[in-house]
Image (cartoon, rainbow, N blue to C red; front, side, top):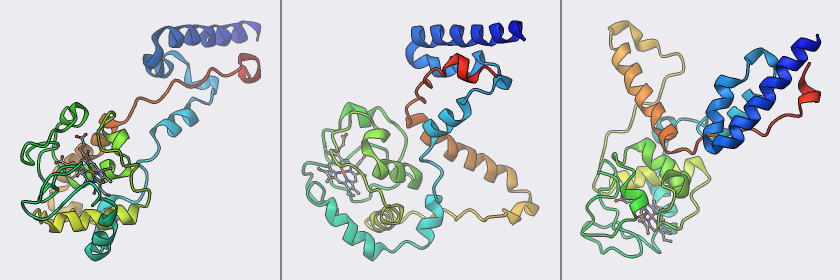
Amino acid sequence: MDNRTNTIAGWVLGACGVALGLGIVGGMVYHTGVPEKAGFPIEGAEAEGGAGAAEVPIATLLASADPAKGADVFKKCTACHTIAQGGANGIGPNLYGTLGEGIAEGKAGFAFSDALKSHGGKWGFDEMNAWLTSPRKFASGTKMTFAGLGNAQDRANVIAYLNQQGSNLPLPAAPAAGAPAAADGKADAKAEGNATAAAEPAKGAAPAPAAPAPAPAANAH
Ligand code: HEC
């Protein structure tokens, strides 16, 4: 009994020391350094750090999105953005044809922030959804001083509207609940596509903060 308690206490102390020493990297150290069976509330902390992505998929919302309502939502954007073809850049860049385009590219010389320029990739539906949820989380240091649209249906509507303005990308297929279409051998390609999409948000997300060290005495058993 005593030995085991000491071992666990040792792990805790060790993990604390390493986490403190390594700062952000501490999150990773926790995963490898703490034995799972000790029962510390690491899982909960991790779920909290990674939360936010587990909403209704944007593809599902887009299937029922209403571009006319999106035009209404877009009024929140017009202080800084035009969207007509050839419209002028203002505080923000003209947004005609932005969906499907490279992130922070083009737009007649608009001076994008380094934060957004260094993001890379294209404005797909998932990227746009993440951006409009929280520009700051998507590209920390962005010049777009807009808090974000908290309502997912608002986002889907405005994305549907954006898509109509010069982009006209095919809407993503809403994921079927049971994925019944696996019989035709295309399941692999589909799964790959999904995996890539799922990995995207993680790239932009900040690493989960190291969980505060639990009080050793309270949790040792
Ligand atoms: C307060 C001004 C402001 C508001 C309001 C605003 N934006 Fe922006 N937006 C900007 C700025 C500035 C940038 C350039 C960001 C950068 O370079 O970091 C930008 C960039 C963007 C981009 C990237 C364009 C590209 O070519 O990469 C998109 C898309 C966008 N905004 C959409 C929206 C939408 C949709 C809304 C409304 C829901 C909105 N913005 C509201 C200022 C604003």
